[in-house]
Image (tube, rainbow, N blue to C red; front, side, top):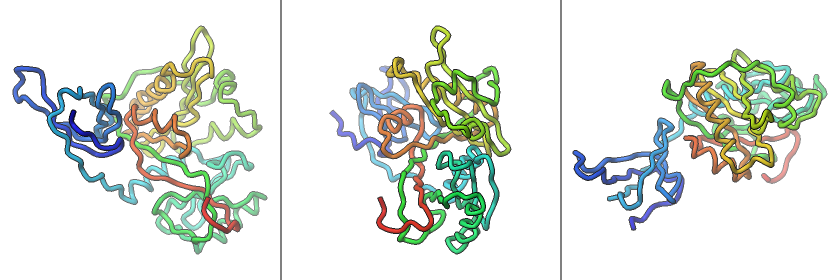
Length: 303
């Protein structure tokens, strides 16, 4: 059996085509995402290629594709506009968001502009103080270098993939507000939940759902901003898990987003959510960067 590297490695696999094919071999380049029962390679287009182990002639390990700061900034900008909180503004290059304290994403400042720097944290803090909120920073990799003594937590993995016209599907456009069944499965009863969920900057929202016998069994929120589709709030009813419904509702949104003109997609996954981290590569996503949260005024060792 041909030796295979660890999952997540970028590879070039040469494999045999059906007997009589010309040429007899084909090359597949991408990220290795599975090794059994079939070897699966994630192409940069988002397509997953299945290869039989018996057909593999050679495997070559490739260096990872470099991630540029502009790519990180682009994804974070789209994600911030897709989850802007009930109130938002710009303070010295930081995109500040407030939602009465409900959700980290809706109440944190992100360094989206090149001018954002730690020297302006005092002004960011003043903005939150005016709203009687703590100052919470969302710190993506490489975009800004905050003081080393800040405590960070809630590490989140940002995974991305490309979309093109082949992903687009003609689907009925869902209303830009979630239904009562959608909200019930989402399970967030906070008074600010609906205003936070329905906020978007210069974009479109879709609250997708999968039903079974007229019951909502899987949901997800889609937001198209800045040419990106963001998928969030993926939930599956407990009695219906392990049936592929999370992938189904995400694929629905991938098709919807492509039809709205999105050319890339992202998801944001807590680093400890192993189930989601295993799911999204099967849908064509690969890790781009990570971000963490930090409270201004909280100092100590990273946790």
